[in-house]
Image (cartoon, rainbow, N blue to C red; front, side, top):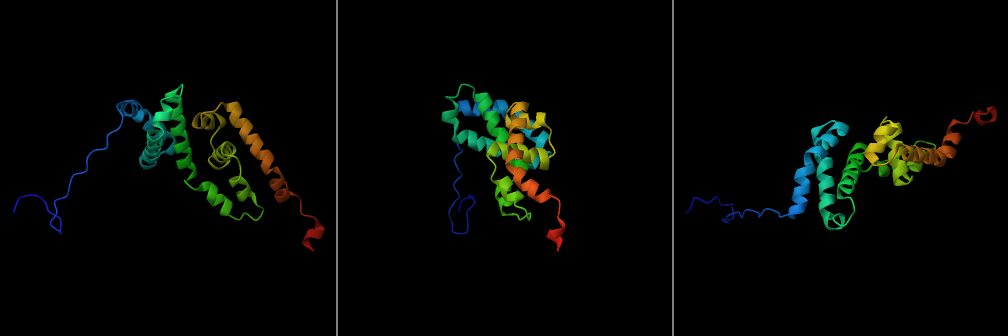
Length: 175
């Protein structure tokens, strides 16, 4: 018998071949991984969450690599993917679905969950996350005025629900 490590069935395990990535992708990863991780860590505050967000971002970048290479600004595009991964991590992977299923008694959570993506992200980061406009703009890759616009539009969509919830109680409603 040889010194090979054998599994119970007698087979010698075969080492998996390393995954090969295009050299330009590997170069991009090596050049940006540290900056991506520092950025994610600053926002997410734990190494585990930062690593998860950066990993998810690079999985998406790798899946879209050939298309991204045709974009005029590869760097901006990959940072945008990272920002989305960080926002997803900040908000929880299924926050939108969770909000839709919650019952606030007035329909606010389902209405939040139905906002367009940029409005949803901006409102949740502002009012649930407590982030200021400048930070939200950086995370989302937008200008501060665009963030303000998305928050205003979301508030306009949510106003009818908010008005119903905050209207004064009339005496006849309590009888």
